[in-house]
Image (cartoon, rainbow, N blue to C red; front, side, top):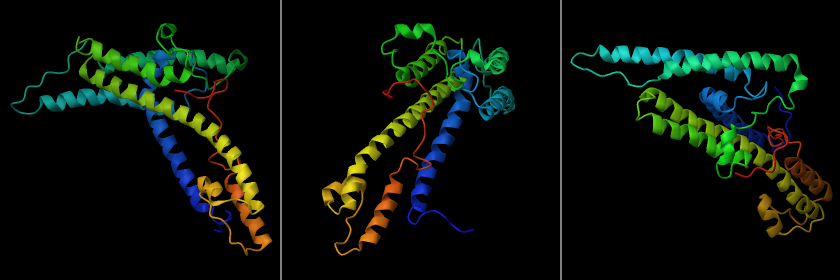
Length: 273
């Protein structure tokens, strides 16, 4: 198949595509792991906040985890001359699974109504406001600080407090700790995407005057160094110079498919953690 990409852009596309795919893989994995926690701490999320693949894989995970827990305990108890007490706790991973599917049913009815009456929600991908008591915590006015730090810290601290009190079993506490870290990473990636979009716009604004100098053959080595561009030979024909500059301008254009990513949410301020 013929490659219609401009000469020299294939490697750039591959690098950007690699970052884009890696971010998607990590974000989706963390979304699956943290969804049981998110439907508790973000009970007013919009209809499209969780995508269908995320919902499917989370449901499969919450079906498999209690089964794996029972099988693991049974296999350990079959080892000769080994007596291992099952994890003690008022609530275990199966309790979380029951709560998860109950909340999924309740949210399913609520989201179905939003789908039938889309005028009732302003933005279908918004995760909803935080729980009211977060307003009492420091720096809770920052949307991203609440999402990246405060909410995962609350989940993690809950496991530290309730685990030793045998309210949470050890298996449930370990899962919730991983879910808290996954939630923090997922929201950091969302913040990073927003920051990357703004940073790309600023970089393009910075590169514009330098490219204009390059067209006029007035750009110095100091001007070109931030863009990693070498200066043209002095005897280069004008048509080749213009073609090369046009090629460089396309590289720094906002129409680049990977760099031109819109922020996930509308209405948030400039992303600051």
